[in-house]
Length: 297
Image (cartoon, rainbow, N blue to C red; front, side):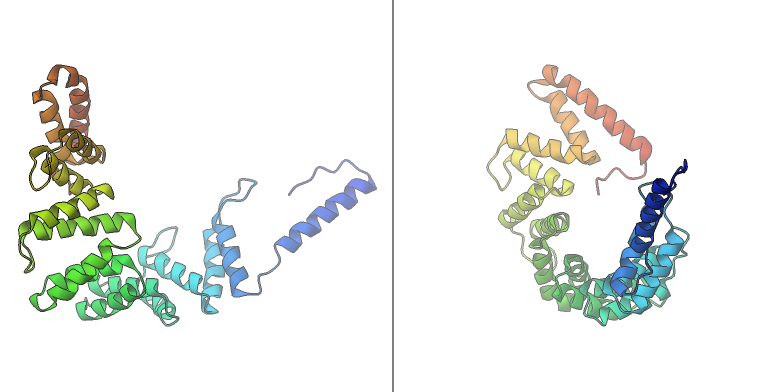
């Protein structure tokens, strides 16, 4: 803080007292937890509007990590994996920090080690090692690890059963977006009879419904079509249109195109033209931004 001194012993004493309090608050951190806290403080702008000090934060973060503080190990791994804020991406450094975190039993670190091995970041790609790390992360409750490992295993006939089991695990995870994505994938598997699973449209519809309720735009489109057509589920035009609007609201081009068509060719087309025009404008805007991809994926 900066004070305006106008003279007088009382003001001088008061300013010295305030300064002493500030010095106490900024005492040199002596524990890994305090070092980590200081790093977080430096990253965020302070109440006086000063800019953050990322370089200073990195120094304290490294000291906390060197002392074995798990949150600091994970943060440093993430920073070096992605780069940014003046830090050059360094997958090898990220691997080292994540390895130290994994040695403490961190399932999150195991996930990122799997990611590094799978994508060959800073080292040759090694799917076997990736699978080992993702399996540990999955066992530790990391839903994304269950999901990625599931798809890796589903690609090989010998490991399809385990892959399907892991995909079910991901669909049941307490991670809404990922669970909805996994549920949509299960819907596709049962609808198309993939990975050795017999076609079962009833099960497919159940998974699509579950995924759609979880917010997956792909599943919302498929389930909307099922409801509108009465395929494998009781026909329900009102719910089908509501579901279609949800998918369109997530900028799914296929859903928007279908919605426009239904609004303009339905029995209430005259009353729906304003909505159809608004969706048409939105679709054109999306096509201008991404002309190469209108699949809704």
